[in-house]
Length: 264
Image 1 (cartoon, rainbow, N blue to C red):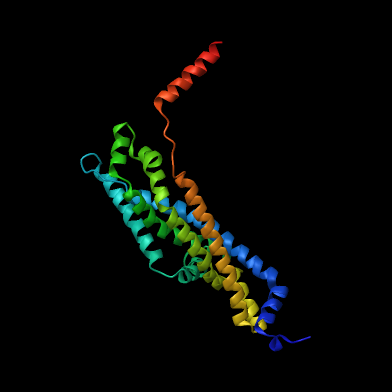
Image 2: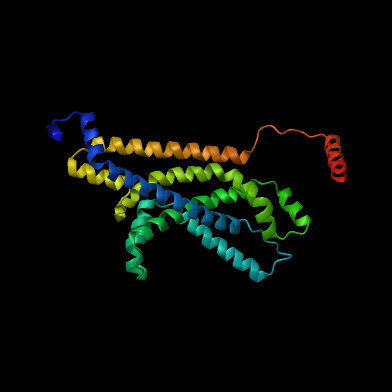
């Protein structure tokens, strides 16, 4: 039997898949779980922050206290967005995992830290996307909603956000794809994701290029499948390209026929 050093490139890849295939699969599963859950939580955070950032202030109708509180909250949220968009996720992971215990005496497990880091990082990016999506909706939509008696909250929930959500679906998908790849930095806090498995296998077998090839193909497969599913979701929300126009006369005739049949 050949030793691994005597094998060809493809033989070493087959050997790694035979002996460590389950480890690669588990690592890929961990990566997908973290990316999926954290993206969902991050979207909720982003929507909350984006909505607050777009709250209008009217000096004539709003009290000074209300204006002060909203402006103060907006400053805090702006600082949060700039902080997490302006620093690498790997530094954020180290700071939260190790720094929380030293500075605030809060003991976070590596899984808690992983979900927290990716979620709040995604939320910071999504906040700007949501804000842009809300701004992109025609202002007349808000004016029309208020004209029929809706307050700002009702107009946002029922009129503005559904339209904004459709506009930012591509950005949600983009953040999800980014998270699939960026979860690799969580190996620094010992999360056994796909990249952590790669480092472990490559370090044990001295097959850095072969293991990297396997991991690259797995990452590519996950991102391509995710992109395709997101495109299908986007197409589903778009609805049909063609809509059949129904003549009002035909509708009236159909109703009259139904009424006559009901009277028989």
